[in-house]
Image 1 (tube, rainbow, N blue to C red):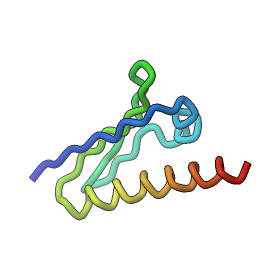
Image 2: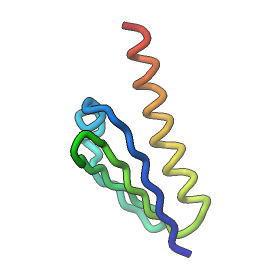
Image 3: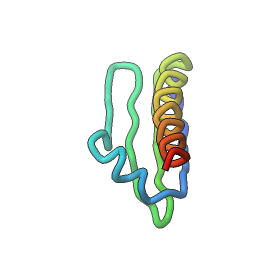
Length: 73
């Protein structure tokens, strides 16, 4: 089964933070970072729900770290 998800964030800094990893591919899942207008989009494709969840968790974990770092400032 092919699954897709998109996370849309309105934060220009995310493009710079994730610039080293604008695209990740493996056998079960991949994601791509896109800048569309004022949106930063993470487009995720996976072959199964477990792989989709793993990529979603990885991205959201990184977003959580970014949010917490901003609170420290």
